[in-house]
Length: 197
Image (tube, rainbow, N blue to C red; front, side, top):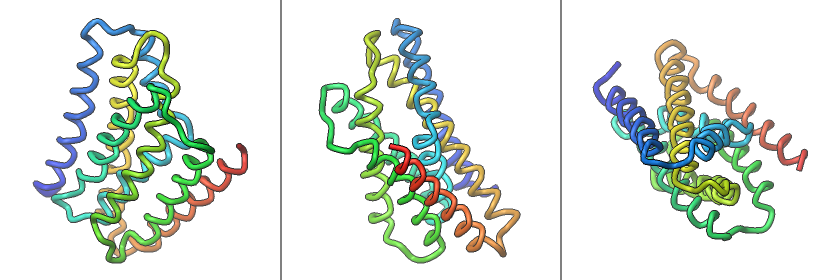
């Protein structure tokens, strides 16, 4: 594994561990556990895994950390807004469609795309997920809850990075069709989730 890939993995792991450490400053265990569990809903889980896969597949190796970092930063900022009562119409529908958006990004990951444009799309999707996280803040408080969902988010990003690295390492000659298949799966999953709302 190259030095830049190790750096990306170290960054994501450190982010996960540091947010987890915040939970030990007197915040309620209940809110932490709710935060840890919240991103395991299918829409959030798929989106966060896709961010990791796309970042490894579309960004230069030494900048793969920027996708997960952008998502997590915007996620927590928009969660603060969501906890304050800010929302948008059809939020859950938009979140479901964000899974399809990430699927499309995976399909075109091997083609040149402006890094700023790709990270901008990640930021928009993260803001939707953050508003939903914030709106579901438990009465026991935001800080422990946020530490929990950031920790889980970082782990899911790390899982996506691992999948992306595995594709690059063992399926290098078939990267485009593999990413297209994955992207199609994510896209269909997003449409299905949308149809269930």
